[in-house]
Amino acid sequence: MSAPPIFRLVDERRVSVVRDPAAAWRVFDADPVGSCMVAARVADHGGVEPSAIGGELWTRRGADESLCYAGGNLIPLRGAAADLNAFADKAMSMSRRCSSLVGRAELVLPMWQRLESGWGPARDVRDRQPLMALRSMPTCPMDSAVRQVQPDELDAYLVAAVDMFIGEVGVDPRLGDGGRGYRRRVSNLIAAGRAWARFEHGEVVFKAEVGAQSPAVSQIQGVWVHPERRGQGLGSAGTAMLAAVIVGTGRIASLYVNDFNTVARATYQRIGFTEVGTFATVLLD
Image 1 (tube, helix red, strand yellow):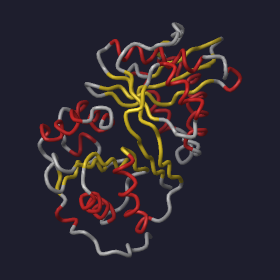
Image 2 (cartoon, rainbow, N blue to C red):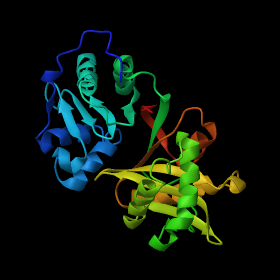
Image 3 (cartoon, rainbow, N blue to C red):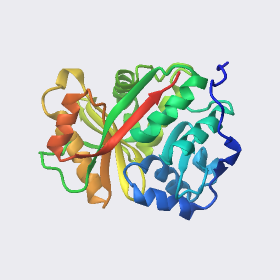
């Protein structure tokens, strides 16, 4: 059981659930890249009903002033210090269901400072993750062999997806249920046409996914190159190909990357991505 917080709680009863989609969209439209993950859920389901979007949109003084998505992730989108404290207190007043906090660093880190006293230490805090965006065609060569993964290629793709997940998150996604949940998630990405790869002799040597897609932005995630093929330009050319497809649909291509991953950052800069902010991620056990 989590220890009680050592500070006086803000009145979390002042936190309410947003019911007006238009109010949420004003926030999304003001920061399309930073809000992509939440905007994608609302767009996919046509509204803000919690049962549809897998969580609640919280506000304290109206969505134009403060907004936070609370579901499998906690994603603060807007708010002053008192709002972030209230959101943290609201989260601590109920059973924890989220596995991480993610979003703009200036919102996530103060909120986590409040939450840590009640939830205990994080498994990992990634406090500086450059948020990058590309609005025009890539400036480097593209790999025309990178294509959408087909449903009958799921097993081959899963090998790469699992290796990427373990390397990035530090946890095997097959733990707990033998991999059924992760397999289903990857299968859904493939069915939606959002998993892309280069295959050689039936093996994935490059992969990337569109993890979230709003009307304005497609967020790239899960970029991976086979260990034996790294340093050969597959990462830049493959990511450039996917980014070009995204830009061709009229959307912004975006991604975020750990600041210590200098190789990946240089790769994305060669493609033409520019930094538009800083994300932070807090991974919880």
